[in-house]
Image 1 (tube, rainbow, N blue to C red):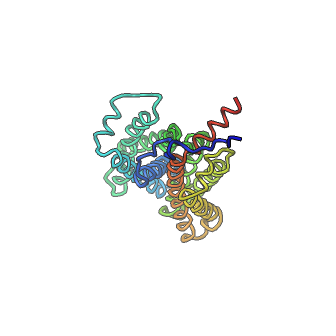
Image 2: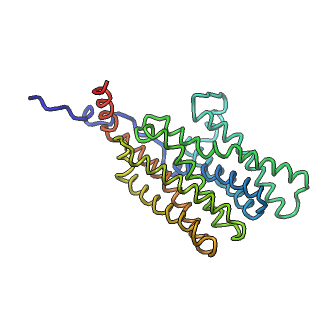
Image 3: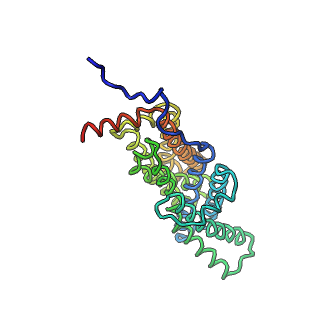
Length: 304
């Protein structure tokens, strides 16, 4: 009897090329971009509800997140001109092309809004300019959801099995992670009397993030294993613990205790960052082992 063929590849070499992205640059870009987009949404909600302290924290957070996100992206690209070159065309089928234009539109709005907050805090912002800055804040919030989640589409559009197979759940994870981090920042830095919207936003985001990550990790597909093993598994477990603790704190002690609110906010920020790094590590791991490519292909061929 000839034994059944196993999933070994040619000379045991990987079938897919491992992404050359650096974790600190790209996973950091995912996290910081999510923080920026989520903060813009939270800032708009705080503006409508009349919480100036939370508005200021959210809008500074949006600009800071954007700056860190672009720094990571440009550092990975090698030089700033490469980002500018991506704006030479608009390609609707390319998440990177649309994402570049989204960042290009979002950046000036987030910058104008943060500058308006800074000028208003020192009393040098005219009434008309204040209205313009406020409108820019609502514009940034309108684009914030896209900024927070387009990177989920970006990684899902690659050949990495752990990323591509999770394309239905990945936007849910990234959206929840963005909301949790933005709410966490608000809980950490905003005045306690104004932090209630941040606590709600953080709790809803954390629940969404945890639910989406659970679906990805326990999906009935081989590539889900990459999220439960190795470095990715360690990061995802740590992310789950930090996010759950932060969410629990946001709905219990955070309303009554300033230290608990700050600690919960810090835990949510850490959990969001760990989730992005865990997802990044899982995608790289899934390209290193040929079984994640060969076994599903053979199963599909046997069923057809």
